[in-house]
Figure (cartoon, rainbow, N blue to C red):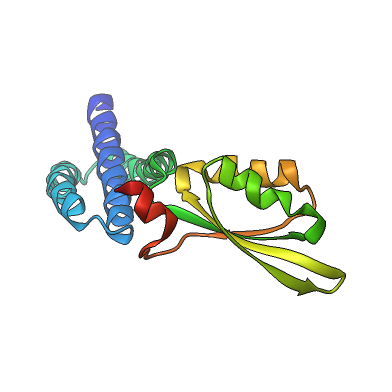
Length: 170
């Protein structure tokens, strides 16, 4: 009985981990890889569901199925965070006196576009900085380390065309 419960949990962790990764791959623009992954995913799903449906008389099997489902979603999200697919775009605003930030970020290899702006308290430098998503934490720490009062917003762009990173990838 314990072996079956553990098998159901492992199957559902595997299934939901793959489901989570497949969805993320589709969203990030990797449909071919997602399609291949979905074939493995559905095979695992059918195995687990068959075991549970053939043994509905034991409520622990259903509980194991639910537990495996939840743990699979969690493990899939952890794997996605480690993969960090895609890019991150930062909008950064600093006082004009901190203009050196632009050069320092470029020196560290980041693509930076900057311009002067008018803020409530005077002249500002506004910039757009793009990086691979796996470098997001490092980039934020770099910006805050150089300009602790910087106003920073980050988000993930869905499509990229031209520019610094596209040239760098070739």
